[in-house]
Length: 437
Image 1 (cartoon, rainbow, N blue to C red):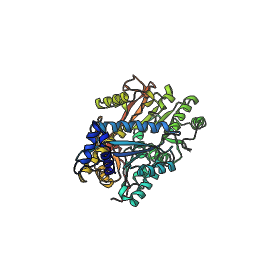
Image 2 (image 1 turned 90 degrees about the vertical axis):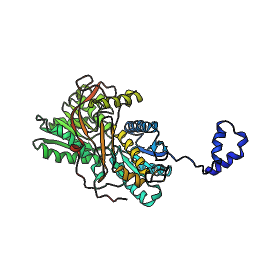
Image 3 (image 1 turned 120 degrees about the horizontal axis):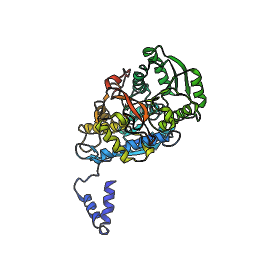
């Protein structure tokens, strides 16, 4: 293709001038070659449908992380460098749409697939990528997971081509339990979740951890509901109140969380919420004053962790995305992109100069990656491809209260850190039996 373009330019040489002649001169240089292709990343996510706001939050975070890498010259290849390019594919939150998007992304030259806002979709992508990579080794791709937290994805369903950068559900629940078990007044809890692999896993593990750490707590009720289809949680809140539960433990996200806490406020439920995702995407505004001191959330990082690096990082994000509704920053996604850039650069040392390394080489480099940003560090565990990082638990408070410098989405409410777990404390055992390449 490059030779054909050069021949066309030669025939039109007399019509060219200025900068065009400089470009044309490249055609006559001995051994002239086209510049290496950029590193294409494919975001396959629900960018429309019930959880579109969650998909767009992911896109903002990844875009910002990639901008930072490209601003310093892109991904190093030993001889030169190439930029990262992020392409969007809307799965509408549906598995079949995600699989169709995967085929389009690979045909378009994507080398890395990014997804996370559904463990069911993630499981399907892991399986499809495993089969594609075996069938078409010349076009193998990696799968980086930033939010699908079903523990099975790095245990019985683990894959050499899949890397998870979020803490999985058992890790998150362990962190929440560190706070819950210290609540001596708590005697009854209601378990509520979304009816698919992740929600089922949260409830199953919650039963086990409660039995181990607080056997005196009564499980007042346990219920799974359809994923992202409930419009009014009032009946659920009525059952929770009738059960005598003093707290709700839930892995709900997106509208399933915001509508739940909204119904709790309107229905007069005064108990505590132990959540995986209660710190953003509308939840604090939905709960309002009723959530102060009563909504807890676990995360890899919160804006109010109160370190200089965290402050600077968060202020930089807010400067880049100043609209209040865009305020949902994921530090783990920044670490994920940094890890990828580092791994590609390391793998490139064992590849042809100036060429993007093959997927298996990058995967082997990712297995040993360790990254730091904004006073947060993490490292990939090679045995199961589960990222190991600190976790924090925060409680919702009014902005301006001690420990709450920053609010969430302009709501006037933020999260004060009440518990910090080191990466070692958050670590969980694994059962992965990985086929390596």
